[in-house]
Length: 342
Image 1 (cartoon, one colour):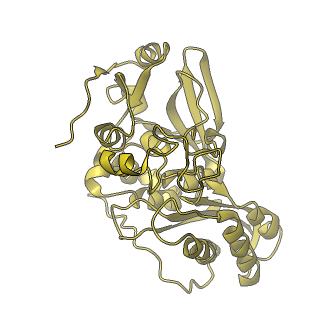
Image 2 (cartoon, helix red, strand yellow):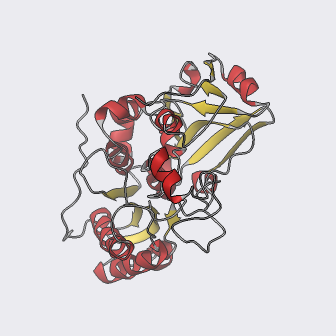
């Protein structure tokens, strides 16, 4: 049986207490623990002190405000799915959350936890004995990235499903620390580095996620497609998130496509806005965006399936997700993401 190492556990009931506990450094934050606890048991991550956010009431709220939907960082993934405003106004986001893992883990896992989930890699997410046998990688105690041995950086990939969809919707996050608070676009929350993958300052806590009104179903259409080996439980090896706003019947007024699991951070396909906005959207334009998505994806051998095939699937899935959002025929079977809420 894998066991946690000895640690100091703190469960504050107020945000100010959590901020104080994190202000002197050294403490690691935990919410649902579905990622951190297994990683610590396998010795992927270490911490002498852990601060839990799950007893702080103000972080467990979902509220409709004048600017949009505000979701606390410790709202569980099941809680997100059960919220009618999420399901009705942001169906692509609901589909992305429904695609995360399995019901028991969604009951425990939180939205903030999924946005901060550790990057993954074939060479890193193994047992201690396996990692030691080939020598530790750069993300552990070694000096070499086994994905690209001549690279000066780690190429572990972003594993969050909520992140690409929320980036496509233009979501923002609030970060709070002893130095104050700041609000940034979620896209700026990430760094393209497998080790330092979050752009958080020392002592900062992710407290809230804002999803804007102008990205809801009255203004935009959204879609989310996820590729993984099994239809449930598994982390994605590719995901495509689309937000498409239309002026008139089929003219694009705003478009965003974001890829997940192909880089150390969500990858924006900037060609979507360049090619679709102000134009009548048809399959030719969608094919051009999908072709560019394949170029932007550049997956590597850091996860399941052959990288070249994942790149080709990035093109196919982008095409299908855009067709779905644009109301055009989808000529590919969609992955099954159950939205049944119990």
